[in-house]
Length: 339
Ligand code: KG4
Ligand code: ZN
Image 1: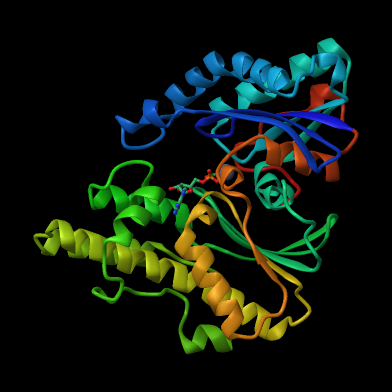
Image 2 (image 1 turned 120 degrees about the vertical axis):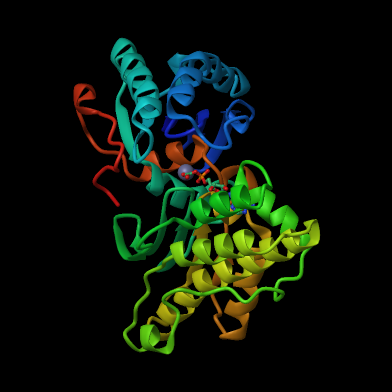
């Protein structure tokens, strides 16, 4: 089955064509980073307007790159949420128009399910049961995947998402936008134990109570306090970026270790979402899984599929295809039902 998917949940206009959930035929991402840079973050109204301009050229480019026409497409898929309402609507309405006018099915896909399936693109199959840490700009969720149809949310952040913390702290330190890559770059020049920063919900009591949830707002406040109280030099900022990155990564991985202590049946530990592009996170995870003698596979998506793209939506649609009338496909900004 050849699926053409559309993703417009935030600030990336993306279209991709995937065959049978594994063969990537094309993936086009029109990023709006340069448009939002001047504002230091995504401006929803500008994002929606940019999607309108980019959506048709992006779809056409995906078809061209795959050397296909709409006749070769068996089904359309689209991100229904979570995301920005104005942005989601452009993708959803475009997909509905295409599916209706060409008389082909349309599969709605949860954006977070999409992120999980980025792990299947151009990679060997995932061995179940798997544990997936979704770390994106809007979400931090630990999820157990028994098989394609049985996913169980284990824990989530109680306040900020991990990516949100990277973005906010980059802004505080004046490192630019988007914050994740900016922090990662600054951290390479810093010393990561120069500042001792809090790891929320990681105490022995949390461990005893099996509290696997996350919290990043205290970490953000601690960094904010330092930036207000000290006159930071460039080197101090690099050190603070490195210390923050380590604290965030440490708390993310700790909960994976705690879960594995009680659930030794897990065969794969994987990352998903924009923050999975962070090399320090991947390296630290691999190192610590080795230290606890985890024998399974430790993985993250190929870099091009860590941040928002439509190939992950087409791949997820293949496994989660459901019969739904086109008129019932809608945008759900706070998230659809399947995660
Ligand atoms: O998954 P994504 O593209 O969009 C959402 O669904 O939110 O994730 C975007 C997030 C942003 O917060 C961005 O700063 C973060 O992913 N990010 C990174 C890196 N690259 C992107 N965070 C840390 N290190 C990176 N290298
Ligand atoms: Zn995303």
